[in-house]
Length: 145
Image 1: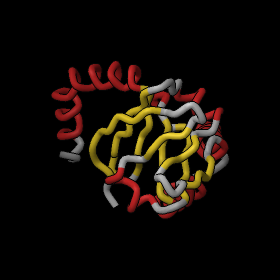
Image 2: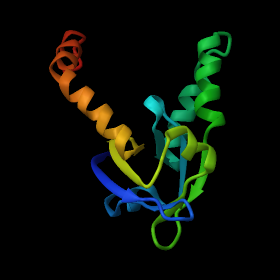
Image 3: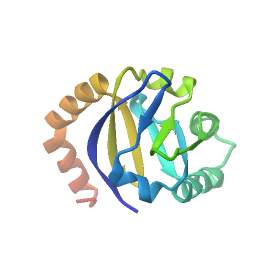
Image 4: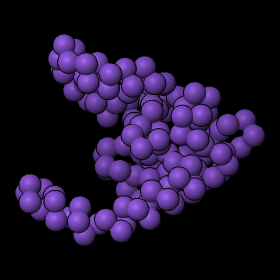
């Protein structure tokens, strides 16, 4: 499954948020949400999460960086139910980590969806857009583009 696109939704007073309709079918009724990089949240379908968790389990726990990253991603994860209205409840610790206020951006990024506080997303996106040419050149140099 491939998630793409950018959608803006509002958190309600009960910390619930509607998933974009285009993402709902691919996600299923239970999803996994965890702390992501750059102070956003990562949202995975169960199948995609199992692949990520499996890759993390294969890494050697002898390295401090591996242990730290596994703790960051795995201990911050929570299984979240999608209700009949297509909403999820964002756990408090994740809401605080990502600094989510009222407006939340859902960004489809291949096998995952990222949830960003709208103001953080705008700041991050502006910075990345300025670097796009440089990033493309670096990716071209390693054969990724």
